[in-house]
Amino acid sequence: MDHTIKPLVIPVFIPHSGCPHQCVFCNQSIITNQKSRVPTLPRMPDKTAIHQIVTEYLQYKGLRKYVELAFFGGNFLGLEHEIIIQLLDLVQPYIHTKKIDGIRFSTRPDTISQQTLDLVHPYKLSAIELGVQSMNDEVLSKSRRGHTSMDTLKAINLLKEYPYKIGVQVMVGLPGDHEESLFESTKKVAQFAPDFARIYPLMVLKDSLMEQWYTQGRYQPLTLEESIRLVKGMVQIFKAAKVDIIRMGLQASDMMEDESMVLAGPWHPAFGHLVFSELFYDSVCNKIDRSLELLKSERLDLIVHPKSESRLRGDKNINLKRLELRYPSLKFSIRLDAALSADGVDIS
Image (tube, rainbow, N blue to C red; front, top):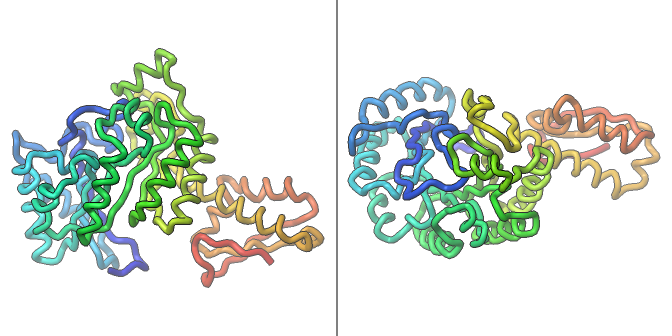
């Protein structure tokens, strides 16, 4: 697999499909920007719909050598076994002709079992993502997840017996959660050594139970600033455990920008960028503060990889402005160096 170019991911959304109940925060139709379950026919996948999706996305392959089809938005292994096999079978012609290299899906921890994994094992799976959300059982209960932290532990231990990459999806701002319990939960997830993680701030969505709690004053969502600070801490925990963060924040869409659909919460279309910018700012400050000699200079060059310049600058150059206020005797300029790692910064 060529890691220099990100793979092409072909998304097939199955919102709410296979879910035994609805969590307090959930409205998958808004999250996935799909107003109906796709693909659907009564008790049977729509072959034409999948073919159209695959054909459309393959046009954008470009130089990418690796292509995955991903079933998102539902609880894949919670589907009827007949439907699971039908969906996977529909992808096989593209696997055989090497137009698609692998299949990935998201599912709940309590649907991982020897039986379900044996069911899908004959197919060319590349990754399985678990909707962990939290490792705090009280938080899981208040969120009405319907599974426990022990289900996650058992699921990951079982998945490690298979050759699939393991992904985890965790949330910040869940009811009953707070900074201490959030970071403790994140540390437990990181100790499982998953291959990658997605971090989602909780949004108050229309037609979710959280909407009722919010309007009744029973739930107060995080501010954008609070959410960025907490997710920054989570990223640092995952990074120390060498867990790759592949997404922070929900995917931007027309529905997510619709205030009648997204009622409250720390929404920003470039949430991950804001978190990375905070991390770069902290890194620069730490380097300066560790060397008093730097404070005697008149000018400092901030050196980053070309791909990371915007993260270093921050939204509307906010990081440069903050640095000038914090260190009024210094003038800052940015120098690009492709030899640096994309998440590193140096000063000179």
